Structures are given as structure tokens and as C-alpha cells.
Image 1: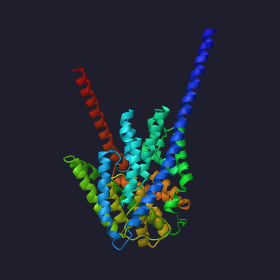
Image 2: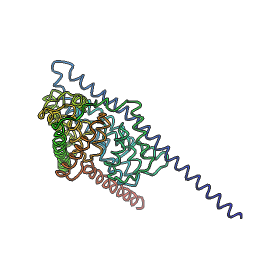
Image 3: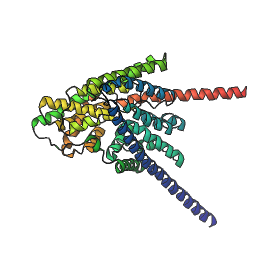
Image 4: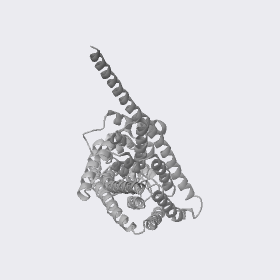
Length: 449
């Protein structure tokens, strides 16, 4: 009888411990999610300030428009040097680093790619890059920042569900799009293995950001025009196929040149890195001056104007695409979500001019086709644009354009951009592990001798 009571007591204690662990895990998710929402708002405000400051500096005098010829290459070189010397793995978007971190189980490897130190550097250097006129955005960096915050919260709370935490940190102000992005792009798994706590964390971080910052369509505006005639439906085909083709060429070009520049830098890593950053920065400045300043910065204003019915210059999308490509290859921290949407808006605007169709609808569909072509994630492209532009009346056209963009992109470039870039970070992390193990082995042998 005494043994039976003892057994029941042990079971009760085990259940209580299980419940405590479950609630501890959920609390970690929720606190981390709220922290991500707050940090993303600060990040957004800082990025807006940097964009405004660059505009003020370059419009402060008669020859101020020439300032980017010095500021942009010098700023790019400084940013690339800081990232290389003090904050390795802070370069680029940040999404490939988060994807790569999901391939490792040991905390050291994850910390090599995701940490609070890297998160802070990512925010500061991305804001600095925008201040220098870079055609970069903050959405991709927010993914790396969010994943880093979640992993730190997990360490404090004693939670080891790393993959789910990284997924939960992948939202950027848009709750619904954040969930779809976490599932489609980050995990590449439509059978959702992330539990309800992960999805709740994504929603909480998005809602926290929305509560403090406001609706995300304040950045991109909205169009309430409705598809009507046959010419409007031709936009679906042309924006889908054209956007997918240009998006695939951008992605394939980034993957191809990334590998070749990495090999070229091996002979003299730092000097060649600085020459790339300064050279590409100077080219970005030239493109910006030729475009009348339209290609500098995130592209929020240009995309908003296009959605609201103002046609962009016919060659804007080519200029913005080139500037974004050069920034991506320069080695500075910064994302390509917002610039890609601006490129798509420009492409759609140009197609709309050629067809004589509604400018706002053309820009909207151009965004869907090109963005789906770049990231090869049609659900993410469709949902994020739907959520950011409040264009529910054109939902079928948006879905069709995004799918056409995805199919076209896959026919041209078989490897998704972010997952292709993540392989380099996986290889670097494995190399770092081996070097660390060799160092420990050498230390142990020295101590033994």
C-alpha cells in the first residue's frame, strides 16, 4: 500500500514538473516575441531616420547631390570592414544565417550565426548603410535579429527547442505573412512541425510591432483599384512571367558572383573586401545620381507612389535592381525585401505604361511577380503583399501573378536564393567548429606535455 502511494506521488510530481516545463517554455516564447516586436519598432524608426538624414544631407546645397560619390563608397568600405573584423556573419540579409543555424544542434554553432552581439551590430550597420544611401532594407536583418533574441531567451529560460525558436523569430511586423514566411521560406516544410507556441510567438511579435508602429501599409500605401478589362488581366501574365524572369536573373547572379568573389578574396581577404565594398558603393552612388536619387534607400516612397497611381520612370526598375544587386554583393549588412518590392513596383509601372492600364494595379502585380521570382516562395510573396497593401479585392490576380513568377523563376534558376546563400554559412560554421576543436586538442596536448 505504501509503495502504491509512493508511486502515485512520484507520478503527480512528474506531471507537475512537465506542466511547469511547458509553461516555462511558453513564457520564453511569449517574452521573446514581445521583445522582438519592440526591437523591430526601434529598428524601423532608426531606419526611417537614417533615410531622412541621407535625403537632408544630399539636398542641403547646390552640389550636395554629389555627396554620395564620397559618402556611399566610404560608408560601404567602413561597414564591410566592421562586419569582417568585429562582427563576422552579420553581412547581407541575415535570413541565410538564420536558415543555416537551423542545421546545427550545438549551442556554439548557433551562437556563431545568431547572438545578441550580432543582432546589435546588424541593426546599427544596416541603419548606417541606409544613411550612406544603400539600396537595402531592414526586413531580412530583422529575421536574424529576432532569431538571435529568441535563442538568448531560450538560454535564459532553459529551453532547447532551437529550430522552433528560430522559426518564431522570423516575423517582421506582419503577423500573417510572418507565419507563412516562417513555414514556407525558413523551414521549407508545409507540414507544420512548429507547434502552436511557435505560431503564437510569431503573432505576438507582429502584434507588438503593429501596436507600437501602426499598420505596415503606412510604408507601402495601398491601392483600392479593381481589375476590370482584359488589358488588366494581361498584366497578370506579363508581370508574372517578366517579374519571375528578372527575379531569377537577380538570384542566379547573386549566387554565381558570391562564389567567385569569395574565391577571389582568399588571396588577400581584407584589402580585396574593402576594394569590392568601395567600388560597388561608388557604382551605387553613380546609379543614384543618374536616377535623380530614386534608387537610394529602401524604396518605400517609390513603391508607395506607384501603388497610389503615380507612374515611375520607365527605367527605374532596372536602376533599382542594379543598385540592390551591387549592395547585396558589397559585403555590407542589409536586406533586400523592401528594395525588391520597389523593383517590382517599378517593373509593373513600366508594363502598365506600355499597356495603358491602371498604374496602381500594375505596380501591385509587378511587386508580386518579381518578389516571388527572387525568393521563390509564392505564398510568402502573395500574403506579404496582400497584408502590406490591403488589396483584398485583387486577391485572385495577386495569387496568379505570384505563382507565375515562381514557376518562371524555377525554370531559369533551380536554387532558391536564401537557401543557396545559407550553404556558405553552413560551411563556414563547420570550418569554425573544426578549427575550434583543433585548438582545444592542441591545448590539451600542450598541457599534457
